[in-house]
Length: 148
Image 1 (spheres, rainbow, N blue to C red):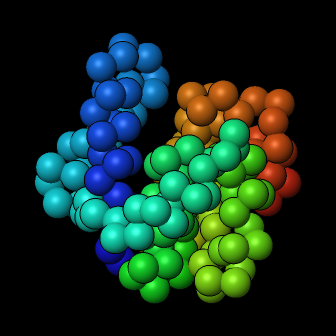
Image 2 (image 1 turned 120 degrees about the horizontal axis):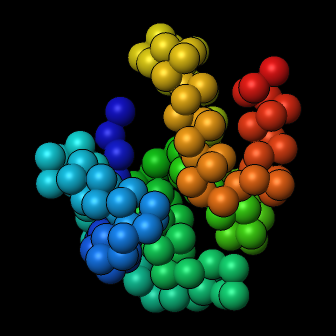
């Protein structure tokens, strides 16, 4: 499995990493994974198309991720922004791209035996708490499908 992200997302991570909050810490960890080569950054060819996707719900990073998937024939786009995912849903379906939340990826890794159920549960609980999902649709989905 290869994890690819557009260079614009790396720039966003570098900016976020300057803050001493949970998002800043997560950005630093993601940048470490990029430095280690576990996440690959690539340029998006169709920048104009990415710009055309911008809206109040879809920012440059999300638009670039979508175009990056389409350009490379990538089937899975991990996106936890429900509003952006909803707005891009029709285009994703037409392009053969499946949008997944991070919890779905954690669940898949657990089902494949790549991580233990305990490690998966801890990761999901941490996401709910640190990503401000409490009381939102993502927490409801986690409770319904993961924390039975």
